[in-house]
Image (cartoon, rainbow over the protein chains, first blue to last red):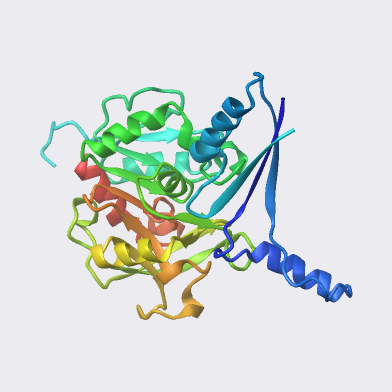
Length: 79
Length: 234
């Protein structure tokens, strides 16, 4: 099954990359964009049919390596 | 050192993408150690007394700087070495690895300028009471190069408080005179933190590159005391 992992900086962590993008957007006239946060999207193809078991394993992998929970938060979505 | 005594053996771990490994091996030899290259697939540290995780871009900085290397086979041996109280030094990418495996607290964010910064900085020495820092004096100002894009040390407020109350900061970015000033902080690191030690005092990580400053001909010897301290602690 395909599993989507989204990793992004926690809200309380300053994201200078997102802020730079926001400034560029504002310069192009998209002044209504008030905040930009940049993250990562990982698409995993995972064997196994038990959705909750797959979710638990992928969340474990997020905590172990895919995200650094000191600065990032993750979200796991099963297709 | 007495004649005939074996030189202390120092492991320098090489990852795919390490690029400061040769300088580090040379710096260990220049300060009296026997430098032993150890490949990241190794499951031991070749009997060395100290270990250095050198700078570079291990695994192309994929995922996060140091994140992939942190899960290399050799890191289990590095962790055992650290937990046994033996000396571990992480330089730049090596420091990022030590944060990733939780041997030191916090994490690295991208520099606040969003740029790779490669230049000399001044650093104030905050500790001199652990074996690795034997040759440094508290309050001393060093001039060393930095070369990184992810050196903006960050931790949640309670961790920052703990680091400061335990006194585990070893180096801070400073002015040439040793003053703390936001303008002297190149990357935005919280509390201008450039280097940390664990509470036991045997695991040290820093963003600057001491191995690039062990000979006057390449711009100074401010890196020598730290490398020598590690070699002699082996």
